[in-house]
Amino acid sequence: MGESVDLTTREKELIRHAVGFDGRSKTSYRNHFVVGPGMEDYDVWMGLVKRGLAYHAEPSPLSGGDDIFWVSRAAALAVRQSDEHLSPEFRDGGTHGR
Image (cartoon, rainbow, N blue to C red):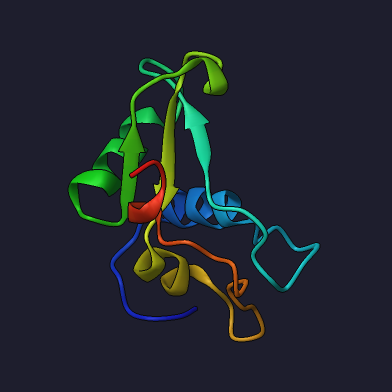
């Protein structure tokens, strides 16, 4: 994996999913995850936000009323395999909606 960031297996899975490292592509193609309070993985995402590894936006009609999370560049780099790359268009989560 990439840079050294202490992550649980589930955190790595969620970050990889959010940026599109899904085994079909070696280049990231998105940066978002939608989940609401009380749903599986919501607390994991809030923990990533508290650690500065993800960013959070309140629910909106666009997200179907659920919260939106974006991955920081550091987190995305931490979970990528050596043959995977962030898209040139990758935006650090902190730049979304601001």
